[in-house]
Length: 379
Image (cartoon, rainbow, N blue to C red; front, top):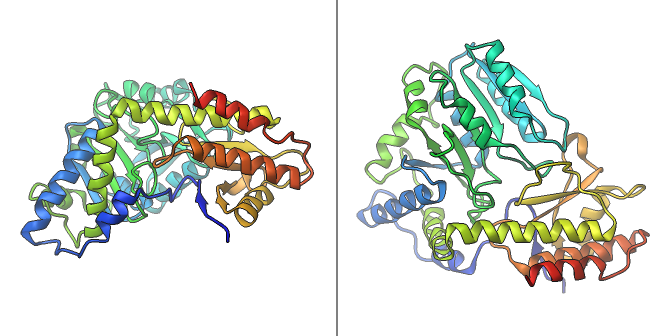
């Protein structure tokens, strides 16, 4: 028997409370008994996002939210800036180009965060830029970008909006959507919100909604104005993902019971313990600065393929973490501490990592990283 542990940056583990709620008999998405369910979910998301604006709930993965955040607010030919510092920065570029946007990439070396002044310089050089696209956390590298600084920079630019992929960052990081001036913020159900894949959430500022009135990119399924109209009636434009939204309510109740500050502190505590334990083993972090609290990216030791570490964790010890992506494949592996995660998820990950490394011939003293993690997690 091999017990399974899910420590990947998505999908993440689902709490039993949510699983039980989703196991109840299905209800119809247009029936009166679904109205309070969706009403509760939309209010819970506003609390989580720290926004007064509605947060759309779409039946899609997070990438669908990214697509909708391009075709609802921009027109072919619009000039936009994309911060490209990893696999998902690359995805912003591909989506924007698919809808005919004129992309200016700010290339950031993988493992580093964007310098806000580079974005500001680009905006000054071309004041007709219509949007800036960035990740809050670049999941492929474990690096967080300074979206607070970027938001402050955008507040005085009425014709330019900031679009943030917070798919891995929401819940793990304190994201003050309204206070920081974040115009469009996307998240996904399978990350910090602790649900299976299938929902994406998008918050939209008043400034962004104004751009939706003039945007000419084609849209049908991802039509945010129609979704907004439906949400006002506690409905979705098309068939609602009823079961997932029922589960969403349970997960939001759990987070509300814990309290926002405690949620952020928990993720910071788990991330710090993971990072320090990895360093105690003798490994280096892949993220050279601004490490994320949702996932820790670790450089594989010289002579060992990072994919082998990921593979051995899964096959020998039942621990599903993550490997490298794109140009980082084979160079690193990633351990998540996101969503329904606590002390012994970190202990399990570090213990398994030590055992895998020893099995692959790396000179690790068993228990060294675990003891460091234990000391930090007991504080």
